[in-house]
Amino acid sequence: MSTPRSIDLLLEHAFVVTFDDDRTVHRDGALAVHDGAIVAIGDTADLRARFSPAARRDLQGRIVMPGLVDAHLHTAQTMMRGLISTLRRSRALRVPTWREYLVPFEAALSEDDVELSGLLAYSAMLATGTTTFFEAGGPHPEAMARAAWRTGIRGSVSVSTMDGGGRIPGSMQQTTERALQQNIDVVEALPSAADGSIRVTGGMSLRQIIACSTPLVVDVHREARERGVKVHTHLVEGTYEIDYALENFGHRPVEYLESIGVFTPALHGAHSVLVGDDDITAFARAGVSAAHCAKGNFGIGPAPAVRMWRRGVDIGLGTDGVASLGTLDLFRVAMIARVGQQLVEGVHRHNRNEIDPAEPLEMAVRGGAQAMGLGAVIGSLETGKRADLVVISMDSPDAAGYDSEESFLYECASGRDVVEVYVEGAQVVSDGRVTTVDAADISARARRRQRELADVIA
Image 1 (tube, rainbow, N blue to C red):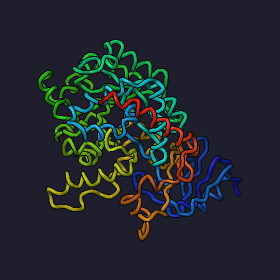
Image 2: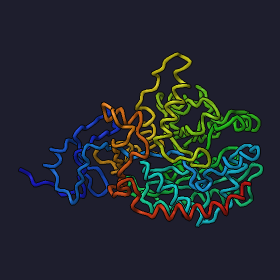
Image 3: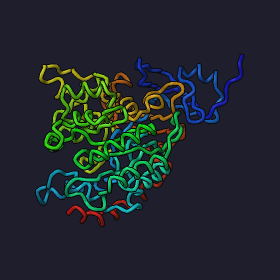
Image 4: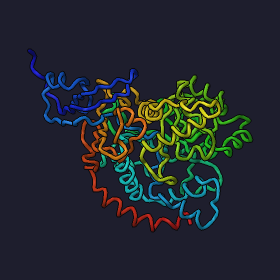
């Protein structure tokens, strides 16, 4: 009989939902973790015989799943939570919101403010089961990176990039040359590793085509492709963007990006609300990824997210931060996506069961990982992938009476059911509380600073 292999951690007696291609489930399952990676998955009895762990956790039938991936996050807007809602009770809001309120707020933030914003956002995300984020681009990405390292989350950060456009604060505008160099600097300061073992990396960002010149769009994509990173941008988010592209380039946004040679797998198009059938074909053909931000997208139009997913587009779910509808709980976003996509895809055909219950969460897990170019690293529980794991309890009132763990997970689970979280095999949430930082202190500091910043958008 062979000697059991020494490993760091064995999670045993769990209901393991792998999110792999076959939707494999292990009902009395276990995961063996060593050096931050999953080295085996299977039945508890088998893994107990094969491994000698330095630590073991009896999960007593709780659900284990991969960590969720927020495919579109604005870290720097975290202390805006509730400010727009308060403002609209006293006056009519100016439009577009991103230009009139979001960008000016970001422009007012110091490096310390952004680090505090990151600590607040990332700790909340971990506590609700999100283990990876894809930053949309904001000020002081180095401060975001520090906050990500401290909290223990996985993420890609980037700088907000704009070299044109009207009514953009001067502090947020850059020359084309400076904007390009800032993107390069972030990537070189925060390099990635092919096996995903580096948690916090740098990417590139373009705010959107109405605020970025064609030379900048082309140059950033060239540099991103050379360095093997993604370019995160807002794409087909509103009618104003389509009108702008038609007026200035004679093309709709996707056609414009194709015409200048940047509609490639290096591009990540957040929102992608007003895409048509030809656009979806172009996404799938070119390998361009996307993010469906269900909290806000349905206020713009009938985003065809599930249609894109079924046609092979790497599309994840994003919270879009907390500037409006302030939750960072991706389970809740998945529920909104399920309801909204049922309306978009099923109602017109009188099909009340159009959306597979698993699809929205699969987008939040597998889709987000694929959209970030990390599908070989995270997004499912498989041997060789990084050990980013979420443990879900079925002790809540919502779980009472469910006849299967899978039904509860896909229909009703939320961030409040998360009891343990592991990133790179290291536990960062225990008994529902983040262990890496003092969440109460961070929250108190953020509330004080938010009151000081509120006048920026008044």
